[in-house]
Image (tube, rainbow, N blue to C red; front, side, top):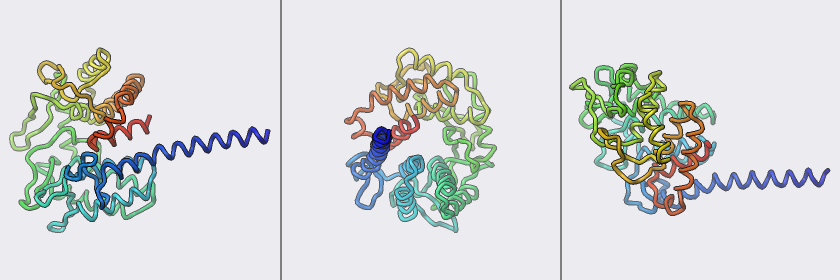
Length: 318
């Protein structure tokens, strides 16, 4: 019996080590393919001339919190502080990209960073994360409003907020105003695909002829979390998935036919999340399985960081 117990313990340790290696391989991959000498993340693998985005830091922070890697999380927080934060007129802004000409933030990236900092403060017990989150939240609350709508960005050199609100940005985060969330509830619900924007100057929705599925999925998710069903969209996307077991990156708004022939790992992340949210767990698992099938080594070695890290979060969660 002792020999059997030792053997089972050995197998458990092997599985544990294997799991750690799998997680570590993501950090190693990011370091090898996406980070420059300063540890800053560029958008495309092995291309240090591609953009350095606050989006990338926020997404990587989400992944690192998910796997509870406190050391790597702290490293990215330091990168955020040292390279992306801009102090102007007593407010603290996050540059949406690392560029001397960039004078705006991006609401969706700020919301992501603030949210993950708040959760990390609780999880790791580091109050500094909460302090930073509060300062960034205060900046948005005091600068990024038009008629009580939380708009897309703020230009700190012009002291001017945007005149547009992107509906896919309107998640349930507490710093997005109630007026902004109400736009999800009054979005046209008699059509399959959603408009993407609300113009605060004209007081009307606007839309693109060609829709990006990440935007559409995010709007559907935001609506569902705000208590607004989107049954036409759900029925359409279930039919689209069941007929081809694929969802392409962009679709024609009028015909609802695919406008491109590429698939996106990030699209599949949000599709699996949406199906799960709608209690379609079988479909969610089908999406994850398909994503794993197309995510070849060659594909992952060429993927934009947005696609790469969303894929890693998806397979970790499933």
